[in-house]
Image (cartoon, rainbow over the protein chains, first blue to last red):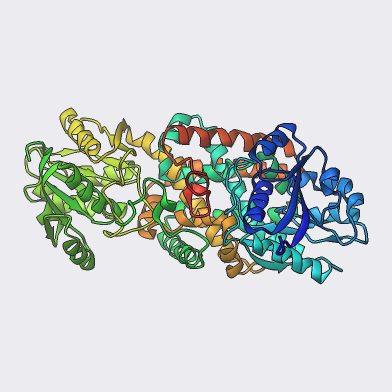
Length: 310
Length: 310
């Protein structure tokens, strides 16, 4: 395996993302050996069965032993404890990385455990589905998606370049950003959207005048789109909101301010204001499709959409 | 065509819904002749080219002449004017119907124009895509979806039964409901979800700290799901909010109340409250999939999802 970027890679936490990294790394022949650990014994057993890694260890310390790259793919809330465990095992020149959706808080709990002879290069792949666990992962998850690599003060340019090359080998396009800017961008493009999706699904479930069975039956009229996102992993998302509090509250404030203006426009029958917004938002969808970040097929190409070729 | 439910059907307004009705009715051999009219000359010309109706007329009055069923498929704001135009042309026993997403306000402006010798049976198919116009329609749009047929005081049971049979022939399942309850149900499963989707897309577009190009690049992290809905027809949706004001404001009040509680939980670090909600909402997604109202494929089965068979 002459092209391997890393000899031994350790994946700590083998859910949707961790298992997709292993599968994509294998597909590309990017690494020599893949070791994996998970806090959950049932997950470890399942990963052994699925057979997409070379070695499954009970502790993250064992997986990290001798590794050239250790990627922490646990929920954010566990990142500090994992760094404390693997930090002392990192060999000279080893790189510690992660995939967390929040960067500032994660860096502050992980960085102190990285010894001077190793490198810390935080990252965040912008990919996922609403499903969780090692069965949910697949090799193509990162194809054509973005992966953000964060440069921290004093980070080693060669280590950063290797992590970028790794993500590009997994199929992603890469970009760099400061942790602070990252957390603001993802508060609006990811965290607040997830929060309002969870919220509308909760609101609909709690009504007295409309039954839950009606909500489910008639969900194709808009509601069902929100339920996909609101089916995402609860632990992961709890940790995101607890760890990106300030940016989420800031963006949520903007969202509510704008929503209040819309509410007022509805109350006072200001059709022009509604029409203007509804026209502007169409253009953004067009740009997203043109840049290959979503499918152009109506209804996301679901079964209810036009048959292929029509 | 011995099985035709209606001899002549007039479709007024040939957009996504009107053109899909024509295509689905033709597929099922449900009707003898289909006449269509549209206020927009370009749409009339395109419908002639596409050839899925027998007759394209300039006015709705001409289309309605001699029709057994007239279905108004214009934006809600035009329903009253169309009813005023076609009402006097309705022959004895003819049925006037519509497809509006709001029922109370639409009934109040249409009903007065229906002569005593004709019947008024409002309806609302729960189907659509984010695309608009006669090219966006397709025969399969209503397959397996619900169509609500509204019984109004004094409505003729036989006319209601014929409209239900028509929608079932188009591929839909049917249900009846009062107009008042309909408007409450759809405020929460459709109107408020559309409003918050339009709103978050607008908020993201207006930020100073995050560029529009970043919003588009990283939209796969959640945001893009909202942009599909926020690409829906602006005229149609303006009219929905103006015509279902009370129910929308009521449901929006509940949504904001719940969102404020979530905001507070984030501010005070109450992880348990977040986790409980995020777990409850998963179950609702499961029910929607089990009842065939959405696809179980991750990511709605988009290109970034696992390849078939994996």
